[in-house]
Each structure stands twice: as structure tokens, then as C-alpha cells.
Image 1 (cartoon, rainbow, N blue to C red):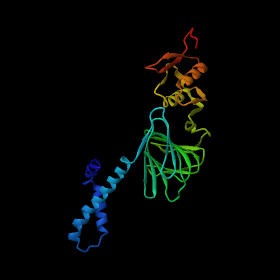
Image 2: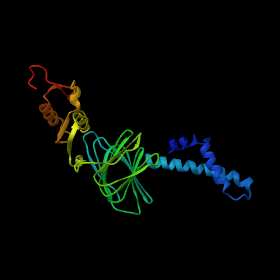
Image 3: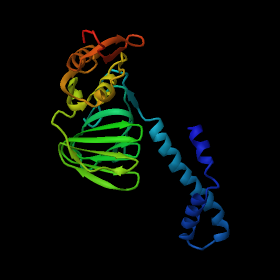
Image 4: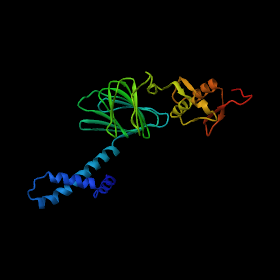
Length: 276
């Protein structure tokens, strides 16, 4: 709290803060202006600081939950809503007054929201805010890129520029530096990770390897494959089973296995005379 108060103190001379204070004072009755002005100015500025401070504390000191690499966790919130955290993810949960808010600091989460029209359910993921009423959806955040996938119900997505879009079931959109993308259809198994499976439909090999690596500390690496990294992969794999995935793609694309860093796995094109 002291750190927040010190941070708020840096705004004392900020032109916008002083302008806001003057605007409020201008709306006050002129009576006893000389005396009351001295009281209202610091009070107004303190009010601005308080909003900043409690908004900061609301986020920083709210209950936090996280998962490690390869771990998943199911949270049941006070209102009955359920949040399933995927591998290497972190959230903070704030239920205050008539608002339910979850901050997705990193990673991926699937939400099953308890219906309550009087209390909006909001997911804050950096530059994107997702508003839902009685619905099931996924939010994935990777640095400044956010993907929202709707399974059931209706969600409203807003970026930090005030642009708004709505999703229909089995649609996905992304929010990034370029704003909000168009909504695109997704497969019915787009959130298969919630059942412990990774499903690929003509996914480029390089992207499939990156996704598999999210679920294990044992990493798979492609070496010298060139354009083969763009070849499509289709199949169903258990999340975290790097060994099975490496064996499958190695057989399909004729890759030989090399020892990687630590207990990692490297796959490279089979050379002349190699078994493949």
C-alpha cells in the first residue's frame, strides 16, 4: 500500500490531474471561495490519488492463482463460476460490489460463467477486456497478443482503443497491436486442452512443436528441417507426452532422433544411409 501511495504521489504536478481538480472546483458554489478553495483542491487531488491507489491495490492484492509448466488447475469461484487454468498460467480474481473481474496475467484459461445479469463477468487480459453473461469461452494471452474463443453463449470484446466486437459460438478473434481482428470459425475441439488432449488440424509442424512444448519441461527441437517446418500435422496427442509426438512426426516425415539439451529431444532430417 505504501508503494502505491508513493507511486500516486508522482502525479501531484501532472497537468491532467490539476485540470481535473480545477474542473471540479469550477462546479462548486462561489460562496466563501477563498476559504473553501484551499480545502477542496487538496481533497479533490487526494480523491484522484485514492482512485489510483485502490485501483492498483485491487489488482495487486487480489487472490492470485497460477499453474506450472504441464499443470492444469480448476478454480470454483464464489459465485459458482468455474475457471480452468492451462499450463504456465496466472490469474487474479476480484469480486467487488456488482462486478466480477478476473485478470489474466499470462497463459490460457477456460471460463464457465454462472449467469447473473446484475453482475457482469469481465476478463481483463492486457489490451483486451472480455465481457460475458452466462457463457463458456477461452482467453489465451501471449504477451501483447490475446485470442478469445467462444464455445457457448455470447461475449463482447473491447480493446484499449475502445473498439468493440461480439463473438458467436464457435468463433475466435484476436486482439493485438493492430486492434481487433475479424471473427473466424473454429473447430468444435478448439479447446480440447481442457480434456488433456492436443488436437491438430493441418497445423504447421513448427507451430505444433511449439504447442507441444508448452506442456512439458522436456522440450522438442527441430534441427535443419527448413521448409519441412511448414508441413501440416494432424492428429490427437496427450498433453505433455512429448515422446509420443516426437515418435509420430519422426516416422511420418522421416526424421531421425538426436539427443537434445538436458533430456530434450532433437529431430533432424535423416541423412544418407540413416534408418529414418
